[in-house]
Length: 330
Image (cartoon, rainbow, N blue to C red; front, top):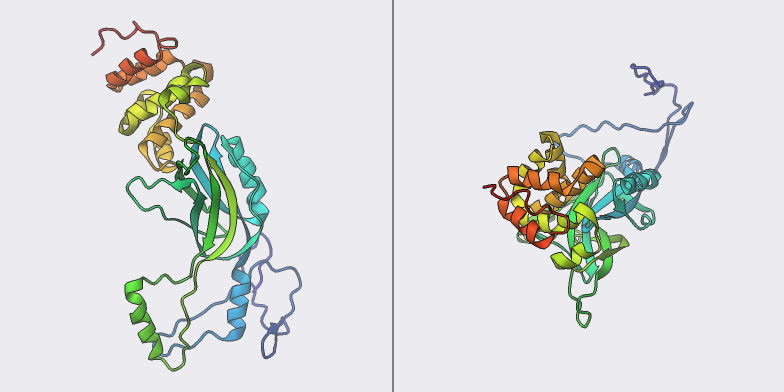
């Protein structure tokens, strides 16, 4: 079937396509370049048949995509990592856009082949690790050419043996997982069921295939004093605040003037409250510019009933905090 650009109706071209069938291929004529070929498959549950070799090969060819991986870390928080699994033709543009939003990144990976719906697992090698935060450290992303394939993870540097205090350095490795996931306890049952069908051949379950790898560098965790030493102005307080505010970051966001949509957006792009608070503070500074002062920040903290944080700021950062401004506030 064909459809001209801008037209709503589709025209059946079967009779005019000069279709010729061969043993392992089929040929047909088109009058202009075709971007999509649609195959309609009807499931027959009463009498299932194997998918024939020609449509199977065609489907695999149609589903195969050239893909590149991008790994980006926030310039103000290298522990926050974004991984993008992108069509090769869009990788450069996506990387440039994210770098304008405060991320830094090595060059994209080389081009690899992925199928639509392919699941990819991300693993770290070296003295770096995916932060668990009470859950699993396994992280997966599923590739679809027509939508965003983005994975947010938190990473941390580890103490390498004989290298106390050095930054975490390693590689992010990407593995293509098998298309059908079978748990170990069910594997024998699946094999037994397959063996009962004479028309099928029992195959070994494939191991994950390594696709590519990208370098990753994660600063080793510093104390509040060390983290703040090289920063000037109100940003000097941010590390301390995100450590102290944590789960109350949403209240602080409200009093800093963020609406519900903005708060929800920050929640979605971070995986824990400390990262959300850190993201909030830098987003506030980016929005307000010179108007993002310690005075405004202290006022918002006080309104959010975070007096202990206010008191801590007075003690640790007397050079940028007006010490007497909030005396007597409950």
